[in-house]
Length: 449
Image (cartoon, rainbow, N blue to C red; front, side, top):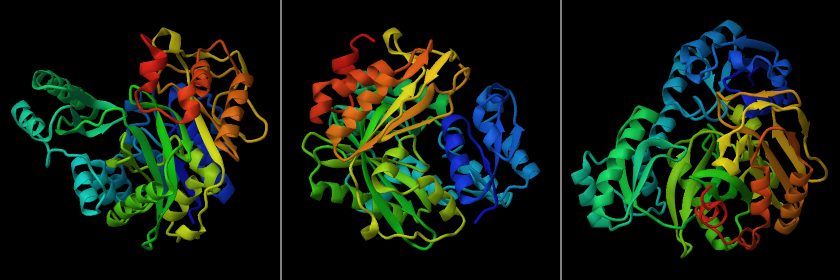
């Protein structure tokens, strides 16, 4: 086991990793930008190192500065959290070259699965269902139009290096495709420095189902069941839950086993997630692989009792999984609400500033993962996520009731947050029935917002 780890992230996920390390008896080194110098979790780390100004390009995304901090602090490994450099294969390679363990999959697995074209090829080889798409990248509009005519409209134009809902455009005819292709390429080049695109058949009004898995360095891969992630705004998840409502046991097993086959074929080590689209006919299709821990990982932890962050660390240290697939059981229902510092009534405008009053919810079945406290200054510099409310109860109905009660208890002032919207969603009849897709929030609740 490692004795000293550097946490290459900030906020809620940095706190989450530090806590896991403390329980494993591992010393931690926290890096921070000048904007985050008053973050409360820094005091929980054994050492703190400033890595630059507020902009992430000069701090949390600056590989030389993070490596320098790791070498100065004499750590054995780096945990990247999620976001920033968590899925950056070049960063993982630099860590390896510097004899520092990257807590995540191998460089080879990251490159293979992070490239959506290569990931689709591997998924096809693993016999994972896929919707029709181009064989590889499309070089220009003419080739994209030819592919679209072959597989049929509507189509999605996607960035090979895409993520977070960026670099995606949709087209229902050739005229739209020609303009959307240019927009997708321009956005991909700015967001990812990679303008490569591919075209796939667009599945409209689908559900977003993902499968959490763990793989060790001894050939063992297990799934930890599925999560329902269809409650989204502009392809950004808002509420996640497990189990996914309405899935037959047969379909659940087919989806989960598909994820395991793909992870084994990729020789994957660590925690990862395979994402799927589930159409209205209950047919599932491969979407992509996330080669990191995800924001919504607590949902899986609550229903399985498995600490995913600890197992990330253990696997990176060479440990063998201590359980098999038959040992894993799914207990009860868990729901996570992402709480963002945004104003839904004003187009989700960011709401940074000082938290004057703050009371977190509690009670039976409630977990609150956050780095925010009374007096904390929410910066405008980074993502607006300030915390995650997670509940776990014996049934979905009880979990919904507990989540609604916990959200009513929440006090955070004067910051505007997504708490009122989460309460509205949890009371909506479509959500209560488990009948929705990735567009229902915008279609039925948000209107012009």
